[in-house]
Image (tube, rainbow, N blue to C red; front, side, top):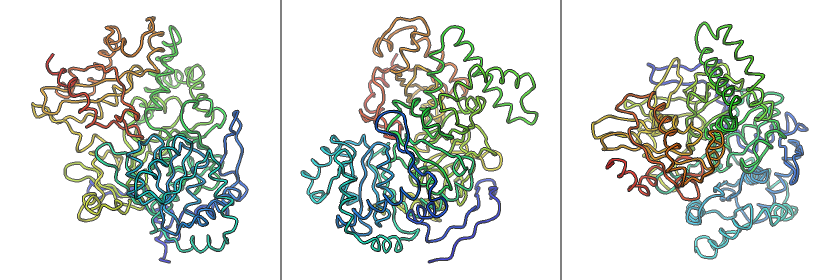
Length: 619
């Protein structure tokens, strides 16, 4: 085993000519840091403390599972995987909504020395076929009969998958593994875990694929565990405190969900809960009572928009006044003099009327919300912080094992994605592209040496494709995608993300795609939020109508024109949206216009709505 890399005292970023910032390790890392090691350490430190809370199949109750009990079940399932004939290094797949069984299978596969390949539950047959064949998956655990049918049909029709074994959670697949493992000697599991090192491959996570075929990012045990151990030490109030509870509803096929799963195992006493989706999120938050909420920005937008749309008359005026006060209060926190006495008093009044109710919606115990997967926007960031919930916006990629930068409770700059995490360095190239390296950076793309070579600079930095700037002492502000910069016919460079993020904050708006490459001005495609539309119509005294009718309604159009005008206030006239059209089809995962991580597939949207885009410029 290689000697540990020593932690450096302090966590303040170090700067090199203001183009590169690094944060030193807080916890030493060594070659023995693997996922089985992390789970065994949790049991050693706090064996009877709750590690996972399982939601009852019916009702709102949660059943606690101690670290010792969870590891025992992990070992039982791992033994079953050994009994199935899987050898160290073989690949197993998981296709399921977020669930206890997912986390159980994840750690069981690692305990057996296997490589885990997640597949989104929304994946098409073609996407699943590509991932299963590219990663040479030998066995897959699926959630339900529909997924079972999809994967089994692939096994029957694709020669490379002829030997693929499919187990289904709904058909007692976990029980089957547990029974099969009873004949396996525990010493075999010990041998396999002892052979793992931090350099061993742990998982192949396929990118969502906003363009082209998904690539499989190879992440090692060290990428997973060494990063999580250091982040727990970096933000203990969020991940490592004595009463930390975190409810996962993000897909565990997404690397950010996996990061949180492993981080809670690496913490001393954090409790992890699972729910499959956000359909009953308010009820689930109320019964689980998390201390932190992790979500993509769209979830926080919807919570805000729903609160605004449900309030009518005087109540809506109160909510909007409260929102303005929260934003003003948060902005004042960033000034040397801080909020004035009058502003503090006004905020205290709205805290009783509005903000306490908002915190109750989040479960009543939430002190931090963690936003990732896309930009949150300054308005929402200031609103939540002003309402008494600290926003920690972060940044990362599949290729960085999730976050490589994050705002801290003690060091926050709203509108940025924060400072580098311990063991991570961030550099800006001459053209502003964000370059990353550190303990979370992946080792390459599976079966694709050419793509791997393209992903790194000559001196070993990962190219992210994002464009950014530094503020203050290392706070990173993402300004756009390198390949998504729009150049108008007049030669103006426009980053669409800022316009899209601000406009998406309106209650009526679901998705936005800003266009204008080689065009005379900037335009936008806007889709309506079918869930919010009835609430908005009712709040404005308008009759019920569906999305198709609303898209053509002049009153809806007028509201969107006002929203576009407010959005344009943040940019120059040359960068402003001069024309827009309202589509009657939303961008969804089901119709192939959103990735499973809720990113718009820009090229596909532009191709599908090419006629509508042309019409923007012929009016």
